[in-house]
Image (cartoon, rainbow, N blue to C red; front, side):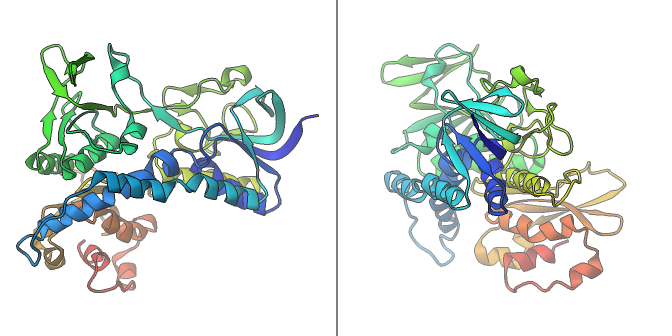
Amino acid sequence: MSEHFDVLYLGSGHGTFDGAIPLAARGKKVAVVEADLVGGTCPNRGCNAKITLDLPASLKHQVDQFQGYGLTGTPAINWADNYAHERTVIEGLPDMIAGLLKRAGVTLIHGRGRFVDAHTVTVAGTAYRADKIVIATGLHPHQLDLPGAELTHDSSDFLNLKQLPRHLTIIGGGYVALEAASMALTAGSGVTLLLRGDQALRGFYQPFVEQLLTQLVQRGLDLRRNWVPTGFQRVSSQLEVHSATDTIGTNWILNATGRNPNTADLGLETIGVAYNDNGIVVDDHLQTSVPDVYAAGDVLAKTQPKLTPTAIFESTYLMHQFAGDTDAAIQYPAIPSVVFTTPRLAQVGTIPAANDPQSHLSITNLRDDWYRQTTRDVHGHSLWVTDADQRLVAAAELSNQAENTINAVLPAIQYRLTPAQREQLVTLFPSIGFSAWNAF
């Protein structure tokens, strides 16, 4: 007889463990099936590794800005040491997360799960049944279908580089592409960035994106717009990237053309779960087209940003639903996004058109903020969007501390605070939070 659980999760990332742990702690019998590293992409080959590698680059960028303003001598990044530090930070995370799951009473099953029916999955020939099953299998890097594509690398490969190549060519214009370009430039590598169209970071306020690109170009980025690769080739000791009309010589190629949902070989067709190229289709309770089968995290087909905090929110929501705390539909809060380049680009809310009669847009040049002058963070801007009642509804910033600015003002947007309510919040002075709260 197969073992039976209240809830079984496929995948062990943030779409799972942030909800599975408290659910098990509340007495539910919970299982998690994972074929790879426990914790999923973010801790092992995503956010944690990226920010560990990036922080020295961010610090170097800020020290460079202080040359002649109290500091003399710029540091150099030792990438081998940086990589060793990254390994120290993240190598213990799978065991730590597995330990948290097990201590909460979660059964951890290693292997690939596949649906037999709506309440049964098999792992290595063993069947497991559950009242409810959650698909939280995440995304994987998109593969290019071009001649020589085996010569390219993905984001995991970049995060595992023990030494940076002398020159990198990066294909793509999203988070991964821009963050890798920024890190490699700051660490001293030559970087060519290839955009299929003429825009990068399409979900962000484009005037700030263009400012970011301009700053990266000033630091040495070779930016090519409307450049469509047709194939790759090894020629002697270097690689070549070809288009219909051009060839670029390089030492290493990063394919950062996006990520696709992990929906293959799960048996979704067997039980009739609906999905498309963007992921698994769910209703407003995160239930799929099959009763008692749910989905959470990046594998969802959704308009909300496919980010770790979104997955955490969804996993926590399902935990409350399964525990009987609520039967309400999911209500997504304001979800901020940040690109960890140097400088950072962060945003929350929808930026309307400049002529929208329902909104007021104001832009602050950071060189006019006395506090930013003390930090030499004077090469960016803030954008504030308020409604007719002067409530903040969206914001964006390009700066060294953009993520901290957006975090500071997030409560004003989420809770639609009026000017009178904002006056009742006293922030630390001097600080980035004080500057943010008093800028709009």
